[in-house]
Length: 104
Image (cartoon, rainbow, N blue to C red):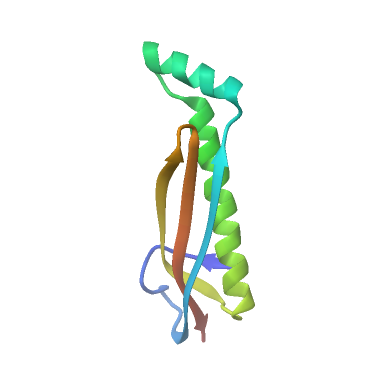
């Protein structure tokens, strides 16, 4: 499945718009990693535990969005976007969304 952030796909013609597709997930790290991240926050530097967590949720959200598009018979997803929010300390939601389309 082709997923792009643009409104069109160069060299391909969109023949049908199937609608909004989305995928989201909420994840939290276990308390041990939360404590390590808190300590790093005091001294500075990258919070790798959270970088890793957000990378995992991004991939899961994209996968769920693609699944939804495949159910509609889409060939691609255009105008793909991400939105994230903190649901509680140490837990984040990531939403991936875009427009499912059929290509010529």
